[in-house]
Amino acid sequence: MNKIRLLILILVIPCVINAQTVTSEGVEEHDGITYLKGTDEPFTGSVIAYFPDGKPQIESPFIDGKLNGVEKTWYETGELATETEYKNGLFHGHWKEYYVHGQIQSDTYYEENSINGKCYTWHGNGQLESEGEKLHCMEEGIWVEYYPNGQKKAEGSYHQGEKTGDWKYWDEGGNLITVE
Image 1 (cartoon, rainbow, N blue to C red):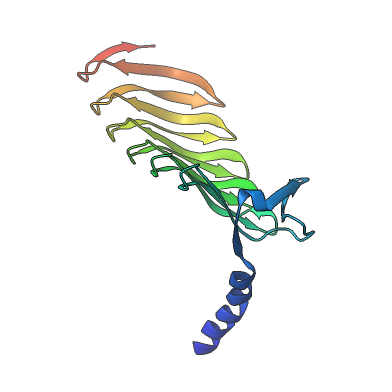
Image 2 (cartoon, rainbow, N blue to C red):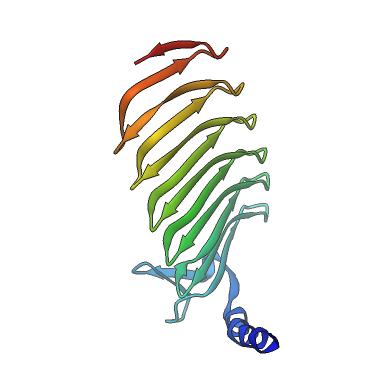
């Protein structure tokens, strides 16, 4: 067990030592690869840009010149605005947006720059606004929308981004008003 821990440390420590944090002015991009200014080595580390008051605006993690890991952006108030997962320079994982007061606004799942998976949005009061799935960036399967009070607003199916079958619509009191 100790040999495994030692091996992990030997592999991880050089990566940590080589990683650095620089401001956005300290890097440049050429042909989709980010470099530390004045070098020809792809950048590994974090790039941070700041608002004029010194608060962080964006922090982007890079490995070998490509976005890798969770990029974060903030509102000027200091509240988290977005968290976006990258792998080898592509959207890969969750992209989460937040309201300025900190409540989650949306959560979308990407695979290699394409929306593939569950998608959720929330009203500012924390109630679920919509939920469904996308396949290759197009709505697929059952989607449900909700009013800010939590009552169901609409429900129906999509196939390749087009509405299919019957769609049901409710009023804010939960009463079915139409089926189309």
